[in-house]
Amino acid sequence: MPMRDVSLDSVKEIASRKGLKPGRIRGTEELQLTKGNNPRVEVIDWLEFENILEKKGLTVRESGGFMKIMKK
Image 1 (cartoon, rainbow, N blue to C red):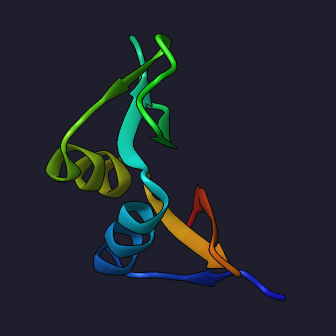
Image 2 (cartoon, one colour; image 1 turned 30 degrees about the vertical axis):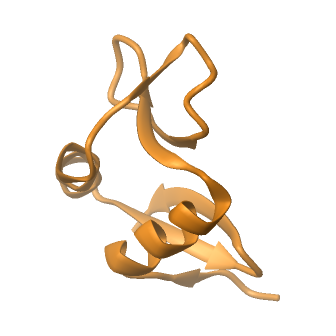
Image 3 (cartoon, rainbow, N blue to C red; image 1 turned 90 degrees about the vertical axis):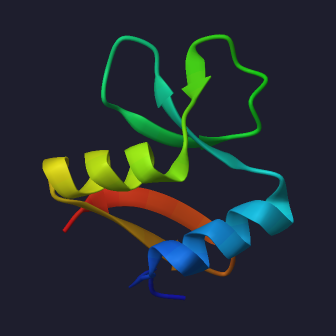
C-alpha cells in the first residue's frame, strides 16, 4: 500500500486513536509521534510540531495507519 501525504488534522485524528502525541528528541528539532514514555523524547504541542514541519520542509505520510515524517 503506497504512502500518501495527510493533513495535520488527519495526523491528529490517527494519533489520538493510537494514543500518540507530538514530540521531538530532546535538544533537537527531530520530530516523532510518541506515547510519551521515552525520556529522550519531549512531548510538544501540535502548533510547535506544525511549525517545525514547515520550517524543515517535512510532511507526514500515512499508509494503513502507519505514519512517517518525511521530506516533502
